[in-house]
Image 1 (tube, helix red, strand yellow):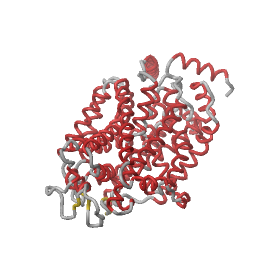
Image 2: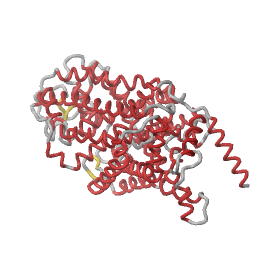
Image 3: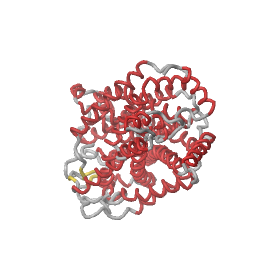
Image 4: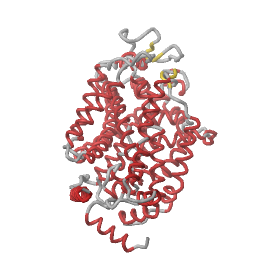
Length: 576
């Protein structure tokens, strides 16, 4: 019986080695796909608000420092290990088998984030369709959904108070979402218009991803480049508005005392992680589709620089419009967005677009087409990640059926987020899966690779793959700066974090318990896989099992025969 299992294992391994691995059609497609997944909604959705809340100019300094010293090396690491092994985010842990649970944590988080990002994309599609109206519907107070506190977004010389609300705010909450103020009695049925938009989004995504990485790579030419065209257009239009210079100066003028505030550095790290999609799995997957010698060290620098350029470009465009709004409303910039930060795309931007005196519909169409494109790029990377992992688990099932299963299940779950109380569920899921769990996964990832697989072996593998030695600064960042910084930030975030609220009110305790259970299910993959690996490792004692478990599997290393033979020959010739 043991012999049969051994023969079956060898047969499966042989099939895997002979498999025709998917590759990008060109290095440019890879780079654009990375840009599409990494430079998406994290920058347009979060960066301006995060900068505003953390001292604007003072935030830029730690953001740039963090991105180059922590996020860039980690981004390079995830690309490199994927490319070196041609493996997805679960199989890459053949290098340290007991920690393969980290890959499943990333897959779980990736799926959760995908479901609610798709619901945001559905709202963007709805706004995109409504932007073709003769009059932008959120620019005026319609009796169908507005109350006596509504003020038209295209009005001027109005000072907002606690009682008054802009038409763009009421349009979003009262007409688009039909939001419930209290979800203790349920979240309500899905909003049918958003359900149709969500269905359209998933249908388009299915046909993009179903036929492999080459088709999604072609789409990246649009999803990566088009947002820059729109941002430049919005920036040019924005800086010509009255008061725009005041907004730009507000963006670049620092509050230096905030540099000593740990929350500013915490915000910088979370923003850079969110922007580059670190710890979610797609970065490893995209690296795995490269040729073995692709210079991902250079590519990591390019994506990091693009991230900063994109952040600054979006920041200048956003704060120029904010300056104009503050000028027309005779109020301070902070008061323009007070209480509306979490839904900036759907409240502040429509309000700003309504201020355009010439062809506001054109700018609205371009903007919401841009943000929909960014959401599409992010979702493409997430589905590609899930498809790769599930296909490895069920190799006999055709990928098109797996893609269909992912799309259908994510659509059904996404319907929860477009109910009247869905925003409350979204906030809970985002807090418990997209924050602290990602931090934990990244901390485990960097510790396992550096100190169990070994940073000396890692750098030797990188030198073999790239053909040159990684610079000393990047090595120091990977081995020292990144692990220490992430650990400190994690401890700090746990110490000061506050549980999320809904519309200013605390959730029921049962909701928090469900959130902790969701996080617990995700994290449990790490100890479960650790114990599973230890149990199946040969050895008479626990020490022997541990020593054997922490050794890389025989299947770890380059997948292509030529590269693997050269790598093994190098290892055999070097002292251990």
